[in-house]
Length: 282
Image (tube, rainbow, N blue to C red):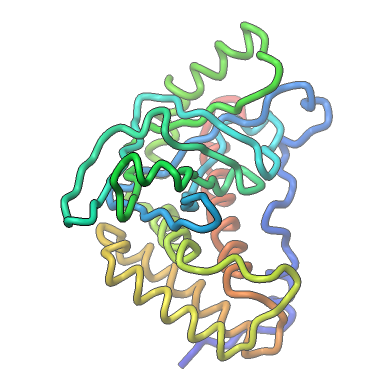
């Protein structure tokens, strides 16, 4: 039986903006580049979905600099750090090739530090002879913000140290596989990647949300997207999916994608805040 949730709590939960301002969005920091980010490692390949000339996938990301401005939607990043992103290409004959994705992918903030969109122009599929493409994210992958004006030498040096030095090593333990919240966030992005963007402002019927959630879960599971995820993390992700269905049953106007995005961002924000609090001088 689906758990019961109070209408007041549900309304409050859904009223929380998916991309609320964080303490780092201080106006005095407007002249500085946006936050350096880290990507949660993913041993299992993350499929990219192609539409309208672009192949994309959402992945979970976290902030390494609380004191810096939050990235706006569309903020572009460049990969940095000791880790690498691997492109996994499946060709029409069934053969699979893996190689470094350096220089092939784009990284774009989805509107905060919690979610990053990986992009690959669809035209490149032909040059790769690819029928399907996915990415695998190694530990220690960081993202440096791309800016129109080059930052000062001091800012650039600090960002490089953040992306590839002690701060990045310290953060890796908070977001490594096996952490219930990190595993839940990764599972939620797998589900989000299965869902269409939908029409802004248009709510979905409760029955449609339940059916879409069950179908998305089944597809991710069948594709092995939950492999290696801890039982605790999977339970948390399942609870968030059920919560969205419960909210819809209660009559709240929402979309499954929007509800899961809010759940994901809340999970990542809490985990990131714990990382911030662990740092000297917090």
